[in-house]
Image 1: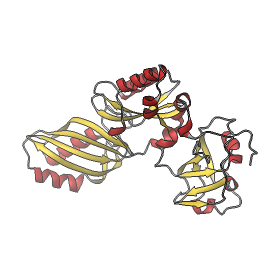
Image 2: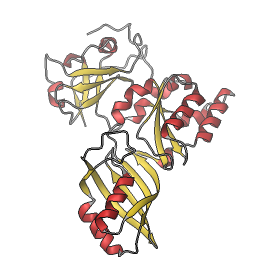
Image 3: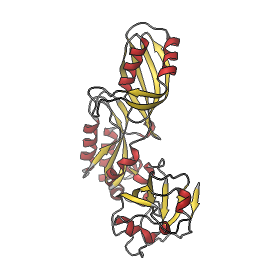
Image 4: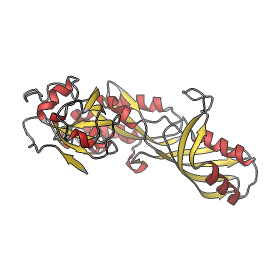
Length: 318
C-alpha cells in the first residue's frame, strides 16, 4: 500500500524506464543470476562474468563454497553499489547430510524440530571469513525429505550468514551419532529461484548472440537493478528533487510524491523516480506516515547514489 503526498505527472523528456533501456544501458546497472557449478569459488565465477561482459566491476551476493552449486546473484558495474540491499536475504537449500551411524528417523526429526528450528546459535567454521564467535541465526525450517541408508535428503530455509555445513555438523553432535554435509545446492536467494538462473555457458552464448545482432536472449538474462529489489521499501520523488539527490543532498519531505507503508526510522530504503528508476539508497529518518505530512526535517539521509548526475538536470531543484 502507498501513502500519497502529492500527485505528479510523468515528464517524458527526462529519464528512461528500466524496460526501455538498451542492452548497453542495462549492463551499466544490473544483476545476473548464475547457476554456479561445482568446482570454482564464487569469486572465480564473478570474475568470469566480469570477463564475459568486459565489466568494470562485479560483486556476488552470498558466497557459495567451491563444491556447492546453485543460485549465485552477481551484480554488474554500477549495480555493485546496490549490494547492501541484498545482504540480509534469506536463502533456501536442498542437500544431503550423511549420518555416521545407523539412526532412527523419527528421533532425528524430533531433535531437529526441537533444537535446530527457530533461533539457533552458531560458531562459524574455521575456514570462514568472519570472526569465530557465537552468533544467533534463524532456521525457518529444516525438513527431512527422504532417507536412504545413512544419507538424509533435506530442504532448509535460513537467515543470511547461516552455515549449512556447520548446521549438519551440529545436528550430528547433538544426536550423539555424528554427521557431515555430503552435498548442497542453493535453490533460492530472497525471491530469486533456481528456475531463473543461467549457466556460464548460456550467459556467454547470449552475449555472443547480442554481439551478432540478436539481443533477445541477453535481454531476458540481464535484470535491471530496479527489478531485483521488490523486497526493498520505496519512496517515489518529484523530478525536481532528483538532481539534488544525485549530488548527495538528503531527501526532504517536500520532494516526495508517494511512500510505501511500513517504513521505519533507520531502515534502508530505495529512492525512485516516477519512471521507476533507482536514484539512490538511503536511511529513513522518519516513518512513512510522517514523510507524507512533515513540512520540515530530513526524510531520508542518502547512503549511496546510484543514478548518474545530469539525467534530470533540466528540472528545477528543491
